[in-house]
Amino acid sequence: MPDTPAHVPSHVAIIMDGNGRWAKLRGLPRIEGHRRGVETVRNVIDAAKELGVRYLTLYAFSVENWKRPQDEVGALMSLLEYFLKRETATLVKNKIRLRTIGRTQDLPEPVRRQLDAAIAATAQFTEHTLVLALNYGSRTEVVDAARAYAAAVAAGTVNLNNDSWETFARHLYTGDLPDPDLVIRTSGEYRVSNFLLLQAAYAEFVFTPVLWPDFSKTDFAAAVETYAKRERRFGRTSEQLKSAPCL
Ligand code: IPE
Ligand code: IPE
Ligand code: MG
Image (cartoon, rainbow, N blue to C red):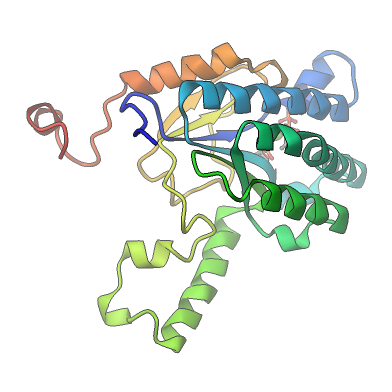
């Protein structure tokens, strides 16, 4: 597998927002916006693969989203189940591995069953990974990681006199994933809503006013283009990077 060219982000993470407003603008129920949002998910998975993005993380349901009206939560869970059922064959065809981050053990049983099946069916693929953030929140992730870390210390596999960020980060849900290079949020909101707070420490952010159901492959490519024009300095100076770009 050749390395991703430097101007293409290896990992793009998206806060998919604006389904409700998209529906409201049309006098439709919110769930109709979510339905249309699923079509966008399909297009964006394709676009990411076509552009050479190796990891795509989609924020599909936050730990806070359980606070929504019960019928909306139920509809979102049904849509997720339907998406997984319908999409697994396409993921296999396109050689895309599926995995999740979040407390998926608390999702309804039919959703868990579809997830397990899709993850198993795509486990052998290595070039492209789709990560669904489901019942995900950065703060619960830190709590879960701290618990796992404490257990590792107690078991003697982590030595507190000799630890580092890398050692701790292995206990996050994303322990075996690279950090996102680019985080996109749709719908004109300028916040991170408990998404990958630690992993996005040095990510580039692109905010677009486009509502998620209207977000096209072209919009995705435009965000990647914006990313390509940014200079990521990781704490260094611009001059340092220009004299030795591989630092
Ligand atoms: C994003 O769209 C989908 C989820 C959070 C599940 P929203 O449902 O948040 O849409 P708005 O923000 O109400 O427009
Ligand atoms: C963030 O969107 C969560 C997902 C995209 C799954 P929200 O619509 O839930 O975020 P807030 O409530 O506007 O911050
Ligand atoms: Mg929203």
